[in-house]
Image 1 (cartoon, helix red, strand yellow):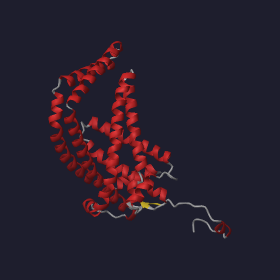
Image 2: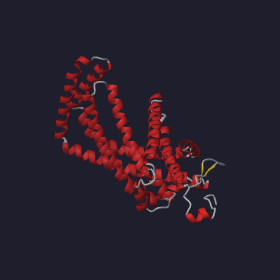
Image 3: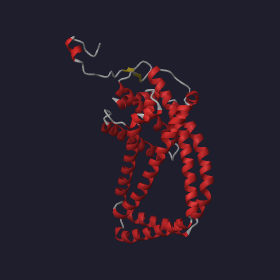
Image 4: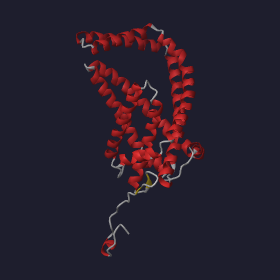
Length: 324
C-alpha cells in the first residue's frame, strides 16, 4: 500500500516538480560555471597529453574487440590498458599539486551546491508535509525562506556526511571497475555487477537517512533527536524498507536512463526533479504509516493507519478495546 499511497501523494504534489526544476537549474548553472573555470586549465592539459590519448586508444580497442567477440587478443589488450593507465597515473603524479588543488576546489563546489540543493529538498519536504497533514498548499519560495534556519542547520550536518559517503563509494567503484575489466571476461557482466554495486550503495544511504526529514518536519524533533532517530533502527523493519527502496531506486534509475537515451537528455529536465520528489513522498508516507498518523493523499482521500497496542490487564478485564 505504501507504493500506492506514495504515487497518490506524488501526483497530488506534482506542481512542485517545476519549482524544484527551476531551483536546481539555477544551482546547476552557477556551479557549472564555477566548475568550468576551476577545472578547464587542468583538464585541457590532460586532454592534450599523449598518455591520456594512449589510454583511450587502448581502452577503445579492448572494448571494440570484446563487443565483437574477438576474445583471443583480450589478454594482451588488457595488459596494454594497464600499462597505459600506469603511464597516465605517472603523469598525474607529476601534476600532483595542480590535481590536488583542482580536486579540492571541485569538492568544495560540490559541497556548496549540495547544500543549496538540500535547502530546496527541505522546502519541498515541508510543502509535501503541509499538503499531507493539513491539506495546505504552501508557496515553495515562502516555505524555503520560512524554514531557512532549520534547513541550513540540517544541511550543515547532512551534506558533509553525504559527500564523504559519496567519495568513498566513488573511489570503491573506480577500483571495482578496473578489477571487473581485468578479471571478468564479458563486458555486459561487468556492467551488470558495476550497476548492481552502485544501486546497492544508493539503497543503503536512502534506507538509513529516510526518517531524517520527516522526523524534523512532521515529528518536530530537534536536529540531534532527528539524527539519532533516523539511524536508530529499532522497530523500523529495516530489511522491508530496504526492499522498498530497492524497487524505487531501480525504477527511477531505469526511467532516467530510458528517458535520457530516448530524448537525448531533454526528458531528464523533468524526470530528475520528479525522482527527488517521489523519494521524499515515499519517506513521508513511510513515516506517517509507521507512526500511525492520518494524512491526505488527495482532495477528499484520507489515509488512517491507527497504531495498535496491546491491552493492559485492567483494560482487558473491563472489556475495553483499542478502538475506544
